[in-house]
Image (cartoon, rainbow, N blue to C red; front, side, top):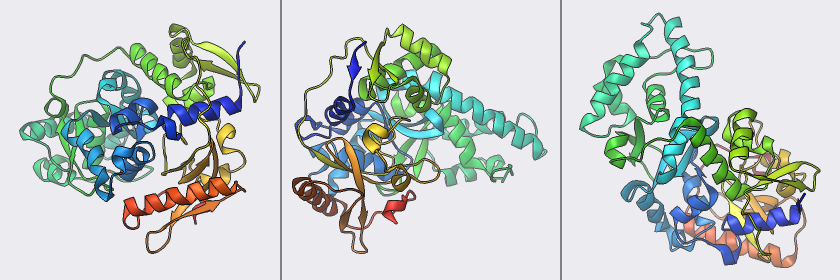
Length: 381
């Protein structure tokens, strides 16, 4: 059995994720293709994940226009709720795989919970279907914000109690998005906020390719993951996909994935044509909260080491991170004036420290002010 060391895994990460100097990517589309997806729970993460990997988003403080072009003009990148009920940015071409698999799983679970809440609220059992139908009719003339949907469809302008929290119209919009009927269209807020005009998928994308079957969709998502993150364990893929061992094992078999041994004694998986990468040399990076590289595996020791408790919150969400040669060595924060500062959790070489400080200065200039976040790790407090 082939063996893949942690050093090789870190080299793969630097090259395939566009972080090493000789591997930087040319556009937001290339970044998303390389990583498979971008995390979009925090809107700014999409922009900062691209900033860290491509010079086209680093021209000046207005570099976010390149991401906006891909999302809202060319529409080559699309926001979609999928794995683990998380909002991601996908390449448009991957949606036919996502909708019937990961997104459908989320939609089914959401429907079950919402229907139970509706019945407990003494509303008609078919309330959700009626609400979906009326919202789709309201969107036929063009996209609407959540506030505009409430005004256009009075029946969803209600508050429904659940054991966890109360919900109303936005939850129905989320379900329509998970089923692929509508999408988060033009953003009416700033680049680092999310105020989308919910738009019919057919209006936003035009004629979409036919959906895959659920099994085909899962297989394609596993292939995409292996290309970007392999080798990884079965547990890594099950966690990332938010699915089951059975689904993952079937996909691995159909892809003829190759088993390899890892330094921690576990078995990892690679695509059959994966020949590895060359040593990228020294590199550093500053990544945003919930960056797809940080969140790509369940087993993170090969790049995170002993810093898990300092860099993740209690819900398992990653804060900002500072990287040296494929390992996380700390995080970055901003002072009251918006200046980016490095907080190291271990010693690094003088050259690495200088390179991180250069990146911090570059990021300070690009941000042009403070960026608020809801994901603050213990190390960043």
